[in-house]
Image (cartoon, rainbow, N blue to C red):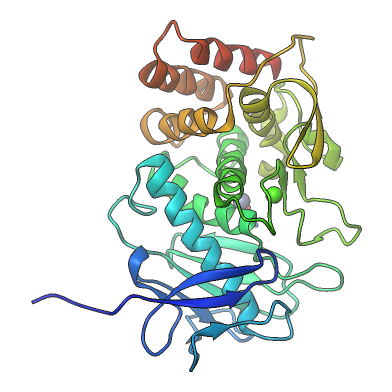
Length: 331
Ligand code: ASN
Ligand code: ZN
Ligand code: CA
């Protein structure tokens, strides 16, 4: 009559987020029955298929170090769960496609692989183990980033090149960062840095910065007519910067112990509307008004429409959206 799998909760020691609760199934597997049945698999160095589903006799997983091969699975499984909960509780969305169906995660991809990615073909997320100083790519913001590529594909479908590609990347950074704040995890406080825990550059610096994206040496702070020629992970800077300004405002501040200093193209001083309103506006724009070919001008229009729907055309939120786009030179 109906499929039934008991909902269990295991305990995991993650690498990046402390001790976490994991959705598991008897007896026991990394199967998150309460979240669409999301499963986490061990590719064990492979690069195709699903490898093997993680199993454990006592439902106590990982030890916080990469030497224990369950540890990467703990972080990935936790990241998918928090992202699921963020979509549901904050965005009112039941999974990536809105149909309650889960994706799945694969860890230990390839050999010394320094990346993570979403694939629409498998409807799954995949994580490498890193190499040298670069640690496993399973931090919470990276998981939220990759899962959000699935969300973007299921909604606006932003084409992964030129300005729409920058907006696709920025959507993953914006909602991935929002997941990190939403988790409110004492071992992994929210920040406007991307990949700050994985040391992908090997010198202790984050992969990207949202307050002033050019801090990475490559990303754009402001729109110009050539921004679409940049790699999508650098043209994303304009929208990441827009989001920071909208949420937090311009100038210097400290959030959760991290210092930021966000400039504006026009010398304006902005006051933020808070990150919760900012991500609700972005998601509404993504899921209602953006399409595969939306560019920066189109993203401005889409977010203004979203702000109108949510808060009204004469709201402070609408005015803040217009001012933040102007501050990154999108008019
Ligand atoms: N980690 C990268 C990303 O999610 C992989 C890629 O370039 N698609 O953006
Ligand atoms: Zn990405
Ligand atoms: Ca982060």
